[in-house]
Length: 413
Ligand SMILES: *Cc1c(COP(=O)(O)O)cnc(C)c1O
Image (tube, rainbow, N blue to C red):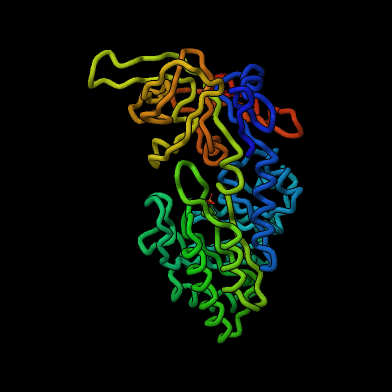
């Protein structure tokens, strides 16, 4: 439990959040490194015996200091752009442990990946396979490929974060994959290494992963008949966490099921967790600027805070629910507040209808903001992005400075 109260004051690993806010200002993202490290260890031990590689999904939170620490633990990486590959390299990550996902890889992305010697492109279409083949020929280096299969598995998750259904843009159906593998296997510029899938995000049940892995194993058998061998099976990420009252994904049970499904097959299992490793480690610290209590029945109570949808877009984008906690608890009567930001959009809210006891100037922690917070942030309304702080060994370090307006204007003329 990285976040706990002591004397009514919310702390992270024993460091008062109020102290961090005093030092770096608000809004600010705060991440507990021990929380990330412990989650990583938990997943690693759950998957023990599967020849696992944990490829952290950089898009969940690409902060260099986090990537560097994960690289030291031996993590691989799942990247979706050349920019993310650059992050991995700068953080000292090993490109030979990186897989490259995404439906729209540019020529530059592909060239960079081949030259760095990434472990696999997770190929999402026939045209992409053609492009990788021709770039590998030009560069004179074999490209390692997996085909991303869309297994048509229902992950029982939000429509915007389901990715493994027929109607989603990702991957190719198994019958198409088979044809692409035969083509790739016959091509001297390509080396077939794996099969990939990613069925969605925030999945709290074991069954969708089992179904997906079974689908991939069926394809391994089909490929075997053509003499095409597979080194690794990549079941993607999407491991769910608890934001509100979701059933937590049972990692130990997941490991058991995956081990049983794999049996004695000589393939390695890759996973691409993002949210699972970092979401619960992080909060977005924000201060109440103004209170606008309802002037009459039928109106709402608004707490206007200094963080906004540009800092955490999940509530606006997916109707996501994030817990909101007062850093110092008050004993005064509560009201039901809508916690909203300064951005000029009705969709600019962080939380709706929350029972809180608030005064202007109060510090709030928006929980589970370690994943898809800073990484999905923007400068909308010309708002400089908040700093990022890592808490470790009883202290804290700013690992990304607060942007200034000058930073935002630098490229304009
Ligand atoms: C986003 C993404 C992930 C990580 O998803 P989480 O829900 O954060 O675990 C993994 N793999 C691919 C291909 C993705 O697009």
